[in-house]
Image 1 (cartoon, rainbow, N blue to C red):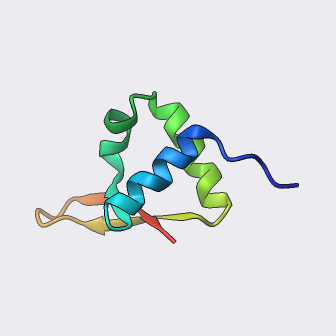
Image 2: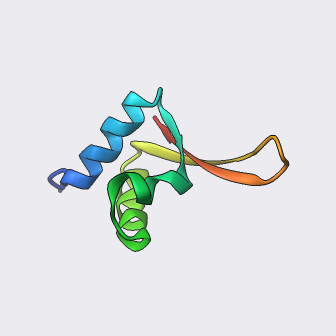
Image 3: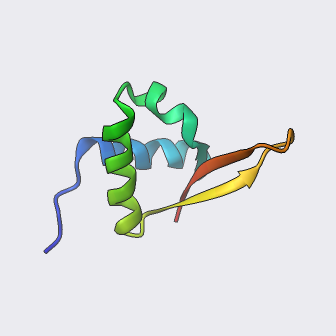
Length: 71
């Protein structure tokens, strides 16, 4: 049974499309004005559906950053 897309899910996908398919995860709570818990639930839903992937990359300073990528 497929779920009906939720507005936050749609906003995340539209933002990723506008940002060339990827964005640093730490900027998302500020961009959408939601709590980290709500954002995490939405990201996990999209990941489970195969719409996004979460990738850890190293920044230029050598610190790991998590990137959200559109699939």
